[in-house]
Amino acid sequence: MPTKKPVRSSKNSPKKASATRKKAREVRIRMYKQGLGDCFLLTFPGKSKPFHMLIDCGALKSKHYGEKEMQDVVAAIQLATGGGKGKAKGRLDIVAATHEHWDHISGFLQAKKLFDDIKVNNVWVAWTEEPENAAAQRLKKEFKKKKKAVQKALALLPSGQQSDARMGLYRHAISELSGFFGMGAPKGMTTDAAWKYILSLGRNVYCDPKKRPLELSGVEGVRVYVLGPPEDPDFVRKTLSKKETYDEATRGLTLADSFLAAVSDPNDPDNELPDAKERSFPFDGRYRIPEADARRSQFFLDHYGFDEIDNKAGKWRRINHEWLTVAGELALHLDSYTNNTCLAIAIELVESGQVLLFPGDAQVGNWLSWGELSWEVTGIDGKMQTVKIEDLLKRTVFYKVGHHGSHNATLREKGLERMIDPNLVAMIPVHRPTADDQEWKFPYPPLWKALKEKARGRVLLADAPDVTEIEDEAKKMLTDHEWSKFSKATEFKDLYVEYRIPY
Image 1 (cartoon, one colour):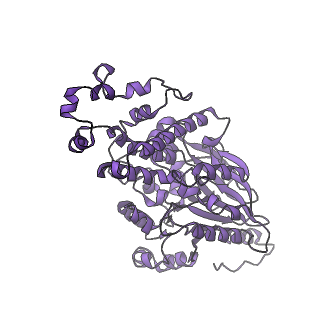
Image 2 (tube, rainbow, N blue to C red; image 1 turned 90 degrees about the vertical axis):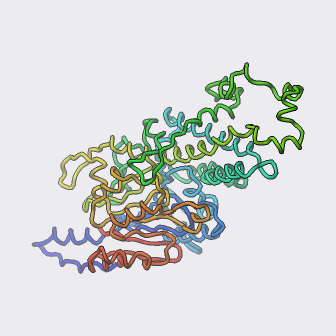
Image 3 (tube, rainbow, N blue to C red; image 1 turned 60 degrees about the vertical axis):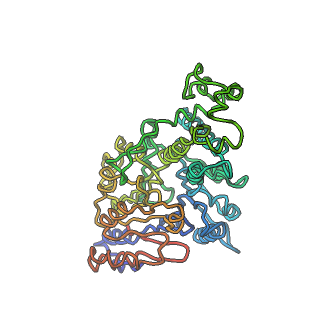
């Protein structure tokens, strides 16, 4: 990107020359094209060498791409960070893993040999991963219990000839959601394995919203505010808001606890309610008849039947698997729970005041919790000042859109509507062919429309080959100078989309 000619230094203008040098700095943001997932490489100018920060690296399973595409992307990351064939190891100063979803971390296993050849200094994860944190361990225990329940439901749901169309639909829906956790993947290729490998890459840093902003070693004028996840469990559990998100969802999860109870093992030492299974039945014990007794009753033989022929005729009367239908709700709840506990950060370029927002896949509860935060920091005038989320959103010039542009991962009034900087640019890590296969509306049309209005057309999609898709609409909302500036700062390559921000 061309820069202004440097001002000649003189005794009369040292400050002017210094200011010009500062303006020449820029942060480079690369959104990789590995598929439906997140993989972002940020490069800042350091005092002696570039500073590289990788935020996530994964893709949901798809027929349109696979391990080769992921390995090509990681090889490009290795090259961009000083490594590659015949060279020294690549170097990542920070790997930030936002949350334990396959579409954010699969690459660490799919391209493990390449990551083994990249030196990682620090691994940033949410405070919820801290081993000595009691609240974190409670959340992890709850997460583990729900995950086991969904896995058990998949095993219990009938398949093949034993399944009817409706049960087949439930199995398909639960399997889709379970894909975010790598359930059903080959041995060793799970989110658990990927997460364990990530934590082994470098020094673990547990990011806490209530602590002071983080700094990037060797990088001047940049600080990182940790926004989420929240500590309050009420925020973690809040997944729906008709007012704040771009969907029309109003349903609650009324049966999830009963489902958990039904699949629980009373002998499990982690089971908090040993009698939960008994309490989960729809009828009291005195109204239930064991199947063995029913088989000896003429009434049941006459009206229900137990042989194969009668089962076909009276199948509609049975509720053997009816209780398993709530597993879909639980899987959805588990997915939202994970998103609400993901690492969300805002990167401030201090001298210019610009903010880069990377919320992971934060959903309603995570976003809403940011309103309770404040930080005391030193301003560019040397004085202490209080920073709140309203201020950070107001100065946001780059927004990584959450959850591939889904309906419920970007807030309205307390999110996008507060991003009022005229230079706002958004990136959506999406792969529309994969989303179409799953019948997911990514990006969700009402949100996509709102993003284009806020960013005045400057919304970059990972699966786009160039700016053609957005050019006509953006040119109607931008001046010639603004479009020229944006297009010069944007570059499309086979493996990534790059956007550069001077500061």
